[in-house]
Length: 548
Image (tube, rainbow, N blue to C red; front, side, top):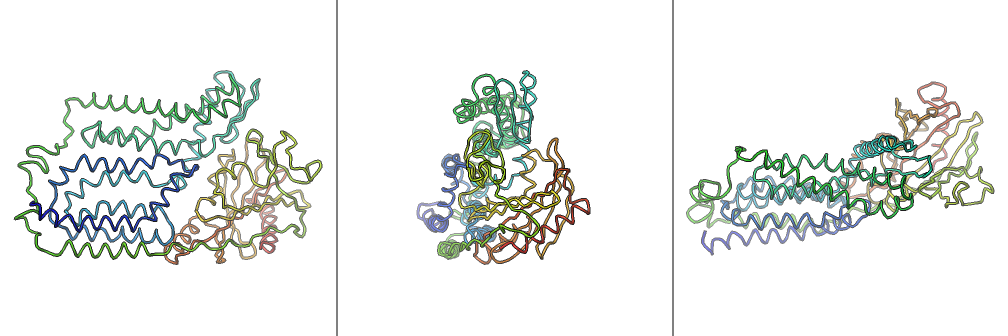
């Protein structure tokens, strides 16, 4: 391809990329905020785009040789990614924007230079998937990873003769060195899993010559990450038991992740070396890229867009440029979704037939006790009777994990029959991370979940789940959702669908409220029995009437 022809082909492509980066400028700003957010723990995301660009730079000669005629199929394939990106921009849905951008990183080169160039852009583009925050969608796996780490640590500690018990994801030592360690969500290992898999993918790309061997090494990242996190939790417990609990839960807890990560990297390199030795002298069935007889090399297919190959003198590239530029200008000018005002939610201080009380939680991580205000002496105190820690209406875990714009309302109601109803109203903020199904966090607190039923009280739908704590009587958790528009549902899946629809189609960011009711009694409380169900329905009806 001559120099004039080359510049004629490159100019509309470079202009398209420039307008594409401008159109996605809001996405870049939102992604930067996520990378800086402590709870997401995605600081490694800053390096992912740099590695993708590095791959493109190292493959630049092969990409240039693969340049072919423009393809209308590339433009057609771009349309769904453009639509997803626009929906994400309207509703401030970062993941939608990222998926659209990643798809365009393949389809735009396909449009201007053909499918062979697009093929070489697939891995650098797919590598950008590591910048997509997905930990909040994997809460189910998070709970099980936390339980795996705590259960393994419990077994090993008992083998060392340490007197420990497990309560959900928490490990409690009752011997000479008393301590309590809760394998909280940030310590599940899921986030370090993504960092290690990103690193493994990069290492596999350079250390293994074929896709088969790269895939095998990449698959090994998952067990290595899980093993590393289990070892980390175990060492924290051992340091707390044999050295000092404060040191273990302070300095060592903060820096032990680096040690385990180094161990995981060493294991990754060892696995890579093992794969190399196993496949030494074995043909994987993949053809080399470059060189004689290979794709893009001498003796391979000729160009499909150079001199004498057709596609010159046409206005196709400039037509594609005009289409993309129009869409990206529209995207850049699309207003972000309007954040709605939070619903006015107030739990009634008095409820006919029930006594009301304030719920308080100790903010000391080693204590975490729960109290009703009337049981404190004097009732006006804000100090924990057990440890002296501060008492607040929000638990320490909720304060740390949930976004800062999350609001809480919480009260305790007791009936004359001895039943107790702990009512919580969580008002979500701008992001979706404030609210999740109770079934995801209850197992981490040690509850065993049983059957479930659906109830309707005063026009509000509730979903009730039976749960049993270790060594305690069964109880019931009922919950419902509603937003500022008055939409009500007890289905978490339906709530998500409505939220995504309103964000993307109506350009509106809803403020959702989740109301949970934990019903308990000294002898147990289960909505599976007709008597307890009637008691729960009666309370929910009264609560729904007074819920503002």
